[in-house]
Image (tube, rainbow, N blue to C red; front, top):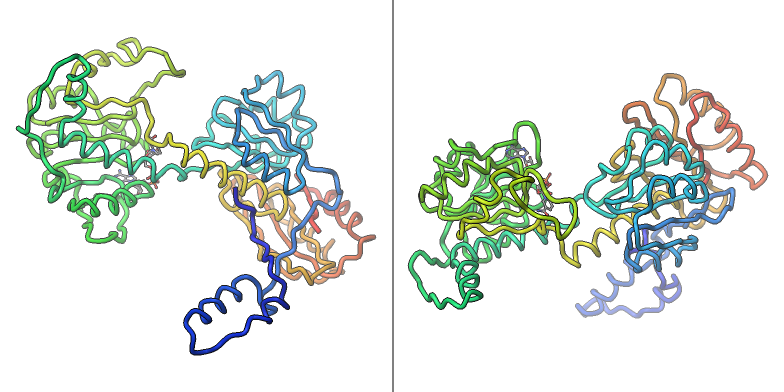
Length: 465
Ligand SMILES: NC(=O)c1ccc[n+]([C@@H]2O[C@H](COP(=O)([O-])OP(=O)(O)OC[C@H]3O[C@@H](n4cnc5c(N)ncnc54)[C@H](O)[C@@H]3O)[C@@H](O)[C@H]2O)c1
């Protein structure tokens, strides 16, 4: 669990006390270390708190990590932690007492829940997706939503490497035979991956990680992406998908599901792939036309495949993966040279830990500093930290309806003060302004908040000091 902004622990005096000899490299390293810890010249950030001084109460559902609970409690938040998801009814009944909520994918934050959430400031989805939250209603209520879209990229990339090797050495099939009591040692059509070509379709967070891992195995990497991107290592971007398909021994897909990526790999593309090559899909189920893949494997053109995602996936563990769910499921399951996994690409302990760190960090940064960077439904706004010595500075965090004339009204209220920094941005109907105001006396703080609250477009105003 990371704290939002590391606060140096070494005092300025202690930093000065280190004796430095300019000729010693270890001393130079020590001096750099001490400087990074906090020399007198470095601005020390002040941790801010809401001025209305109410203890911030967090509700964490669906067994969110105890590390996150501990970190929130250390920051002074009151935390209620539950292992299960709550129903809409339970949420409507109890959400009114909470300032923040952390959920995974099973808790639904509907319009009804948001209407009942009179104190709610922020929602954290401790997962990849945010479909379980009514994002628009949340934004209109002044509530930013944070998630962790990329924390599991490395886990997916590692799974793909394992699949490349598993397909190449056929150990999945051999292992399956051994379980049935069949000894079948063979080297025919089993290959080292060294010197083979991996074609990566979509060179984003996962594709680019994979590129680095693959090269470490001596694999040649080609990639295709709709955007021109800087290749990592010796990877090479190709201009056409067909070029990648015709040159690769393994083709792996890492694109989002978009109208133009649905059935990106269908009969024509499978025919363009090299004879005896392999297809791997850990992206989204509908990116591959699975009946066409089954046909290409049965014809012997494609040597095998690894699939982690499917057009329809069961809702719960233990549910069948059968023809009722996907009409071709049993035919696919009967192909020995196809590795089937239940959407586990991003499912590792490390990914879960990183999701916990990233989302709880984002919640803390919003609650204590007002930053919305990384929010999925809000304009992304942040300001440089207020320094420790700026004791009478307050930070205004003002969510308002995005319409003309709002800044004039707000700046009128702020005009008696020195506004040190100010930044505002909008997304759809909602706009967010952050401003740091110098020399506000404690008596003026509440007055300031009341005046901004009264402006005509106000959705939610917080003052942090
Ligand atoms: N199996 C799993 O458990 C798992 C886990 C995480 C992510 N995913 C999926 O993996 C996919 C990739 O994730 P990411 O984090 O790398 O995404 P990303 O947004 O970082 O990268 C996607 C890349 O695809 C490119 N792209 C978009 N349309 C394209 C097209 N038509 N042709 C070629 N390239 C195109 C984009 O330019 C971008 O570079 C997503 O679909 C995601 O949902 C699956």
